[in-house]
Length: 353
Ligand code: ADP
Ligand code: MG
Figure (cartoon, rainbow, N blue to C red):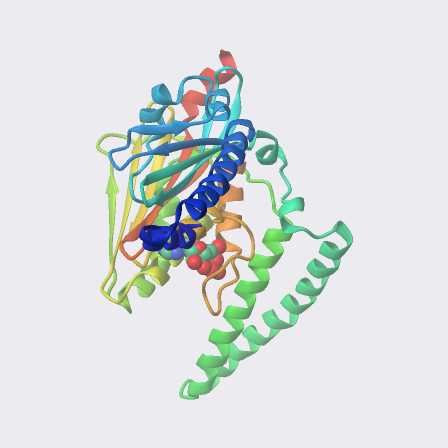
């Protein structure tokens, strides 16, 4: 499309009247078709100019938001010039989950709004994984069979290491075995998610213990890591500490893999009336709009040894906690992940109300 317009622009001085009429007719047909699509599609679309003002919106945007897009805009917090993806729970006109995506375009920012209520309610990722139950059980069985000998290998390697500590090759074998176990574990978890065992607690705890286990990963690449806690007592949430630790492990691991040596990762915990909000910001390579739009889908990886399962598991755990996860990213500049978990107080209020 862009090439076509640039071509016409370049040659416009040389086109005769007949040619211009032809191009005009062609363009107007296409515009009318696009305009019909824009007005009838069930996806909400808002186009913002470079200052964040609305240029164009379609009827679906208003219908999905329940109010005029202009009135919803400040609540949607669309970052300009960055790609973004996040779920928003709304209560009016009825309780629904909307997925908001935005991508920077030449003239500003394009925002998409989709109703994902039923998709999010489906607890299993059956459709997204795209495999039938039989195939999944078979795959899980095979993975399990590989897991057992791996454990035996790892144990025996550790014994060998203890009796001959100078044998350098053993360390490498152990590392590779650990890597394989990690892949198998991720795979099994993706296929057979376990429900979180929710207890009252603080998010600071799984983050601190995650940082303790990952300390060497930051240190060996001189990556600085900071933890900023909001002043005052952080409200409690209902959480499965082990599962949330995995969430932060996955997000921090990705951040480490995205930054250069000497890069920076900043973690923050804050809260508002409804949620406790954890942010993980890195100044790494960032993502383009296309990557952000498809984030959290399984098997999407840009890494040679990646599995593309980490973020899918992460978003599933967060959803099982009644929370949401969102992302903002700018190519070459960095990425910000935001995890929101509902405050216990809010839950009680919601139940009473
Ligand atoms: P994997 O890490 O195995 O590739 P993930 O599900 O954890 O799988 O991540 C999927 C993809 O999302 C990554 O391959 C990477 O392209 C992108 N990604 C995730 N986190 C970041 C980040 N902090 N910065 C840049 N890209 C990221
Ligand atoms: Mg990962």
